[in-house]
Length: 154
Image 1 (cartoon, rainbow, N blue to C red):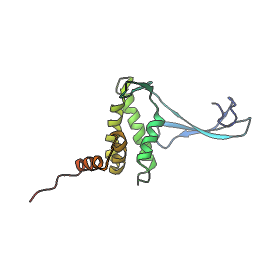
Image 2 (spheres, rainbow, N blue to C red):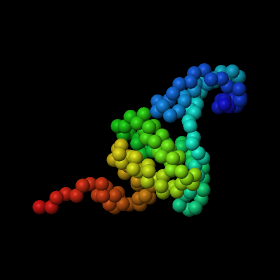
Image 3 (cartoon, one colour):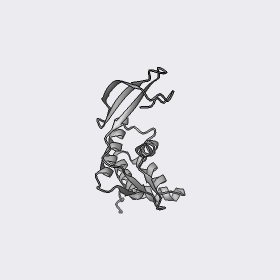
Image 4 (cartoon, rainbow, N blue to C red):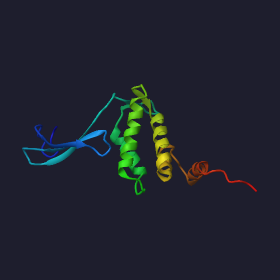
């Protein structure tokens, strides 16, 4: 593993343990050249996934990009960070076990929205506003009205 501080390729593992979500190994490393310390995470990757965008463009699946978008929608929400990590790992496992290496971005978005809806409604609406490209307040209103149970008429 290359040192992020000085670029030395000969770093040493000082400590290894399971990460909080138990689907990764957390390794503390140090660089003998500069003395820098850093952490790496090692995860099992079942297959290389390719995301097919709505434009037809193909790009390699990026777990970090998925995590960033989910964490943005979960900002300042009362959800345990470990629960978020478990959700992300579950989404990735689900994508990898679909049996296909090429996955439509729409399918990923739907899986994320389904997962967020189960955990936090506000995060679900936040993610949907970007995913569904809301342009006006009416778009929010229409979407939220679909979430509310129908009121009985008297």
